Image 1: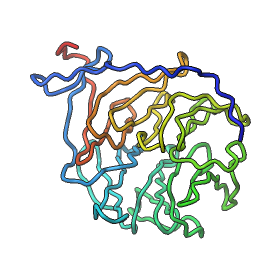
Image 2 (image 1 turned 45 degrees about the vertical axis):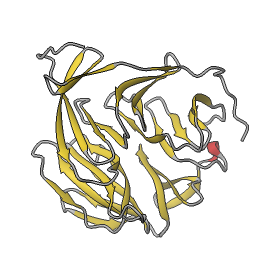
Image 3 (image 1 turned 90 degrees about the vertical axis):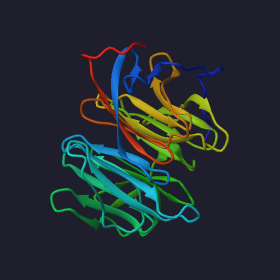
Length: 280
């Protein structure tokens, strides 16, 4: 695919977050967030997704550092209760926010998890090793490994996402304006659905610096890089770092736009406290 790049010079803005040890929290763009440790002693907690209706966080972590063996876990952000989901090798997660259904990509295809019944059932007959997954407006997008081509799945009908041709996709989301955001080995891009014109936000080498893409409640896209969380500012065409993290692995937003993020060993909850002023 021939990409039309509208950006000659990539710009990244850093330094929007300020830590405050005395308050044990973080100030982001003038708003103070109290930081809470949700779970620790995990190996690379990854693929964070939150059901905004139930305030349940879903993610995976590695069971064995030397092997590709993963486990899906859920945490109730209200009660802090957590439990593992009974699905083999759960790796990536996405949520149907209207029906409160979670789709889990595993080494043996896609499973559909029902919060009400606490059961995960096979959703398809692909039996593929799922690499990435994203749900929006009745369509489930996914890529498998090792091919990493992007497909959509609607009413059990599988088809290739033609706008991306034979491009290998690492991470993928679609915003509220029907613009696709994705990473591959060469960069972080946006591209309107129905178009093959791509906008380059950040050049990458092997795509390994980005560890996830997500949407907040307002439909804005954020990227988790290994050095922190960035807002993708579509108005200015630049990345804005909102939070610096050492070895970040994932990010998600709850229904109040509070932030959940993970580093190499732990998962944290940042809850806004507008009545508290700790500087920054």
